[in-house]
Length: 402
Ligand code: SF4
Ligand code: SF4
Image (tube, rainbow, N blue to C red):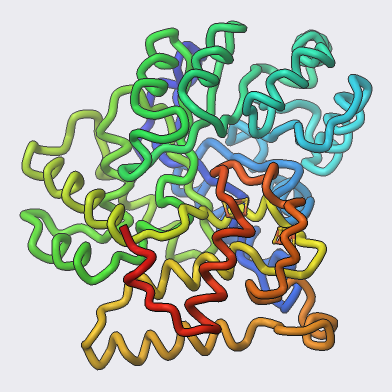
């Protein structure tokens, strides 16, 4: 494993961090497959990962509990443990202790290495100030319940700078990948935070897995590149190449992913990509941008939907369909499989009763309950209309592509 500077903190962090938001699951209402999850988490630590990231909301609370059990038996001492205050659920100042104490119990630990305000945007930032939650953070730090203070971010560059300038943060977690250099915190925000000595940790390096499954045009660029890499490796090396990046989180759900990502991390280095390789990445980004219809990262923050719509799954199917190679026989088979997957989503209340939270786009009642929860600011009901139009009314996907 390669290790990197963690901003101004007095320890080094593994280039790869273990994100626990996409642990292996099984069942229709997905439950974390605990045995496999513990196995892959411990394997990652044995390979040198020393940074574990989770949150109250991940896997509806199961992530913190499973991680706590995975870190028993000596693993806790080998890692920096990070979780997040769920800002969208916090209503009053006293909620701070309630969540922190419950999270420490779930994680079976006396202290957190870093505690983050989860999902700071303008609304949550204003709430953080109004409820004086930073004072609570500092008090908890003085009491030994946490060591460093940070935040995870989902908004635009001006809001990011406002937050950065507000407090001497020790760490910031941002969404960044080779397609998102100009959205959310952007490259400018990454450099801004780094220049202030703040450790910047990257989430969504694969844009919710989208950069792992390239459309045919992007795969052709990868196949012709001067260096042979997988799509995932290209995306990760892009990040590790940058001096401003401390650690890259990957939400790993299988032993194969841990194995491959650890191997990538071992080959990583600041400034290690050539101009030619950087050009490959620029071309890949442009190709993806022309294909992706909905920038959903499958974070599940919008779930559950009161009408049972499986929002991320509907968007994933639409994006998958937009990637497919039209005209090739193999592409037609995959097209058919994507459409079949859509048909398998519940289409009425009877099917929903059997298949909870797995409904298709046309079940959306446009209640808008999901919209403020989406960090990507996706107009979910309107985008779901497009999904229904393509899969249920035969609208041509090309008419939706940029
Ligand atoms: S707007 Fe549609 S998808 Fe969103 S919560 Fe309401 S019914 Fe569900
Ligand atoms: S629609 Fe938004 S909140 Fe829902 S899964 Fe996608 S990115 Fe996350």
